[in-house]
Image 1: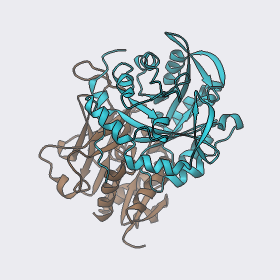
Image 2: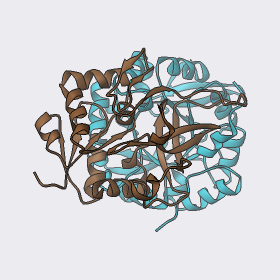
Image 3: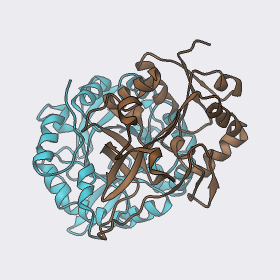
Length: 215
Length: 264
């Protein structure tokens, strides 16, 4: 398998075609698969996903992929989780009852609060383009998948739950919804998660995918 | 429900809506009298490059024939369009939704089949997530405070009250409401602001206002007074009376937060 091959894990959820098309647009060779040996041989791995946490974990489990993804992390293969795929990287989620996640980045998934501190109401899901804001004291911005982004670049979010890491150092960028800070990009070593959809974020998203391909 | 966060306005989405019949982009007036505009994906790409935040494709005769022809169009579109795509028209089952999502759509918009079988809303949101399930509502005015739900692209009345139906749809798992005013659609007379307001006040999920945009300034009322989270635009774009850049500039001037977008 050529080194530039990127594997998208197919576990029956998510708009895989768009992720594939986005990566191909960036010049990557892409394989969509659920086969453990192909996933473990990838140069880089993408874990996509939309929908409910519990259902997604069950689907991964049924395909025997929970251990495989954990092994991807052990082998230091670059791993990018998108949207629900990002949330799955954490320890657990509150969505439809407590469910264990992949446990690759310490933290938990909780519902976006419907009320701001000032009592104003946020419509849920959070749908739309939000500016990515660099977390204070985090340097990843300059070297990671966000390195070519401009300061006012926005990306497309659509979600009702958010991924709260246990340690601020894992949340490298956030966005604001109402007065609430929502983690937008989380990272621990070679494991990265984007709450937004880079494959649906126009040229900004394509830049992020390109930087992931070249990372 | 009042006290909507002012930040909501900071997420205002500008959506290009493409009504499709067969292989053509068409435009109607009050959902009738279809006129052919041209090849849908040429227009879709143009709007993407202008900075449309999302696209909606609506197969407007699909309910009549019981099928949706958009899979091929969508599959081609997603080769060079990288913003969210919602597809509606003739989606009657979880399997129909699955097929259109596999073709590259991100969300499905459902009206007629959801009215006939509300359980479908729950089934689709359970299967693919609420964020994927857009309840499409065609509303026709009865009096100043009351609107009736129509189906089959504004052809059939249902006797249902729009606000009641929206509330039920949200309870069943709809993650977004595409609200089309049958009276205003294609008229260029501005949005039905009181319709948008009545629905959006009762809706915890985002409401997309659709139908009637005559000039860029029309979005001000739809958002400020109506409380829309997004606006869907068709006629105004198809006939080149304005473009997304001008509309975005109008929104910015009004103090709405919109996506920063520079045409390259």
